[in-house]
Length: 418
Image (cartoon, rainbow, N blue to C red; front, side):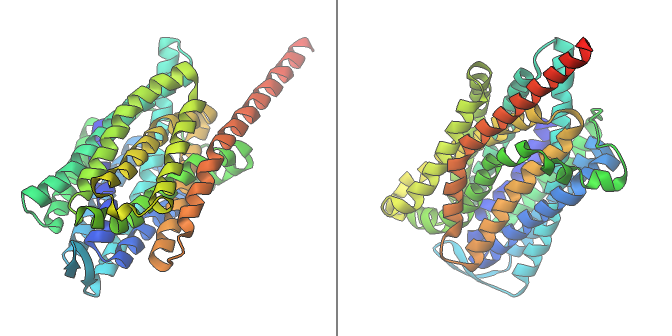
């Protein structure tokens, strides 16, 4: 699962980085907004239902297949650029927006299904390993989250680096590169479907309606709300990096979009290496310090991009934005998801992981929409606010969890005494 999902997903995240440059800015950001908006709707209302009907294997296979459709349509939209300035598309024909929005809608549906099924798979495996090896579940989640993120982000780095190699040095155009990526996405989806087995993940119980609303039903738990700051921060940061930093800082600083793939690869490689190390740190020091590191990285990304001189003149110094995003991404992909597995085990895991992507994609949808329609940089300030609130949110959730466990222990003691 780790390797095939890593290949498949890397082909999808790469177009997001290039969208505002390979397509016109408004078309690229509108497509990204559609991608994240569709993910939001699917995660909230349909992902747990589809998971309950298909199970984790078939659900992942379906979503990975939808991903390859998205990348293929993105490549087709890239063919429709009619005029470029400094490597960025400034004029396209009237079909570019339509095709990009259609592909983004399909990709968003795939993303909403994929991450809910992957989260349920991950939680199920962690629980089974913990029982089989007689270990504490939080230690297992920290270890396996780090291992998964290592593979996942390393493959993402390789695919993103290949985008620069194929365009800059092999002299392929962007549509050709993304058609190749679509083929890789299809091959990985087929390989997963043939080789993977069901994990026995626990689907939400009840009627189809209950399964469809399992993510919403968790909203009555205050922990689900206060733990969302990392997801919201990551969503705003990813959109800010892909929508604003790539076009208005990296393009002028490095004279074109070719090196965005290299910068994205560096981001993913750093996150990959850090993920394994953060798993060790989380087991030894707890997950709180790791969460604080990620929040600080996201906050610095925002501050440096707008409040410290003119970063478009920094040359290769603009890579600092990708270094900071790499640190934050490592925390998000490993420790953050391990936290949700700890706080919402068993049957609650599918709904909990659906909420991870509901809130993250909500933030990105808002940010890309603002980026396509407004110049007041509201998304930047939202990124800063949620980065600041991340650590207090985690502390609050931990306090609530301890109170709940204490109350349950008191009740059990009272029942035993009676």
